Image (tube, rainbow, N blue to C red; front, side):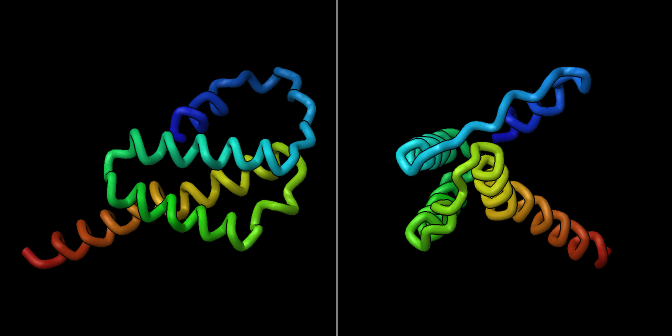
Amino acid sequence: MIAFVALWLVVPAAAQPEPDLTIDAATRSKVIDGSLAALERYYVFPEMAKKIGAEIRKRVAARKYDQLARARAFAAALTTDHLTLGVLRNYFTLRLINFRVNQYP
């Protein structure tokens, strides 16, 4: 997931953007399944990966992504969900713990 963000930052500003693609339910399903499989296989905190996966699956069951027929909008929504449920959540939790530990010498 972080690799995708890093690649996005490396693209030169002068490069012409690729056309936004129309995607269907089967494509969304493949992308979600692939991202969750990679998350559960490679994420450094296996239990957190399972929780993130379960939450994403709840959002799929609630049909959150069904109205997203454009690739960029879908990618942005799924990436945001992954980040807010995992990386950013862990980052802010660790920062809060660090603050509380350092607050009391």
